[in-house]
Length: 508
Picture 1 (tube, helix red, strand yellow):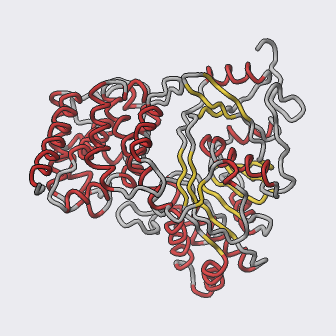
Picture 2 (spheres, rainbow, N blue to C red; picture 1 turned 90 degrees about the horizontal axis):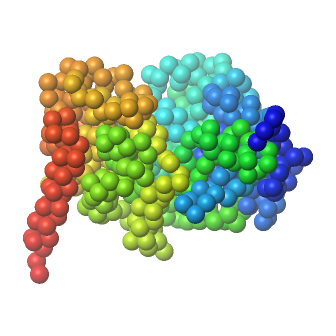
Picture 3 (cartoon, rainbow, N blue to C red; picture 1 turned 120 degrees about the vertical axis):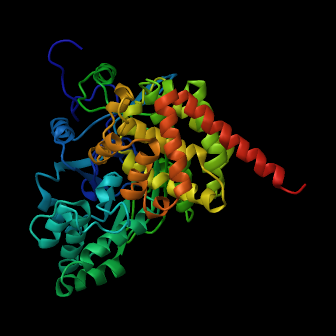
């Protein structure tokens, strides 16, 4: 594109159809990032096209003004680029009716939740956005933002904003509301409700009584499982998409062809016909959650950390290496897949085959540094239950131990070990706490014990499993001394040996 590019707009939208935006908003979405625009917005556009309804979306970014400013300059439009090795296709959902930044207008978030015209609040604020204690899973009442929110004034935490908005809604219209978490938390609906309730219960009883009663009678919190790989936007993608559109889109979203959304059908005030976009309404959302969080996300994390330690910039590059693919297949076969109940109608062998096709999508270019970011929070959702399942049976989860060892080696390498540039590019809130521990550790076991037991990085249960912690420490030492390939070989061999031993003990 030459000269000053014309911006994407409703009057000049180039070659891709822009659907009519709903007249009014019925959804408030917290977390206006790429995933939301490539997932919930796409499903909502399909729902409105099929069944109509006032289901426009008011998008709220947590802090960044980049997306909000761009959307406002583009008539609240952005494109989704679906990318596969076969090529790229473009769509423009066009369902947003407004956008703003929560950090700039925190009270507006509360007022929007209280607005009776808003019937659903959806969330993609990441696992970090729920203000829960890593050790207990309960509301972190020592978090300075939660402390401030409980004192009154402008609420700035997501949980505080939800609680204060529900409090105001109860006192004003009393209109029913649905809060729908779309983050990778086990039982995310029940978890969100519990955290909101804990916030309200921390207020003076006279201040919270009406809101607590309203929470129980008129606010539903269905659980959901979301799945679509959405890498970061690059300048090259921005230019390619804009050339195909014929107009400039500052914020196109790249996404893989695969998409899935499983939802509990428990909506207090109606919902869009999301099934028109392929959403599945199910009583087995917990099974979908476990399948996705462990098989996709848990293995994805392992691939990212092993890949970064092998100087692989992208997930396709990482999983394309035989040793990493062998590790990924081993953790699936021996540790993650046996830990789940497969949802009805899902062919698990086909699902796993699709996983490797998705990870191997070279056109998508998903970076190991992006997938490996925030591992201290992500792994806490992914590894404890399947690890504990084996430990309780007297078996060692070698591949999950390798995941933790590779994570620690990326985020807090011991002195003398260089994990490489892609590990260094990973962002993690725990890095500042872990690095001094790594510097002080004489062995991998010291680092493992300090992070897993003392910091309780992965919760209280794993903190009290010395055999697991010892195994993680051994693998940290192997990575530092012999390299990540040696650690992969050691872990996979041990996992396969244990599996054969168990099989030989089964009576014929």
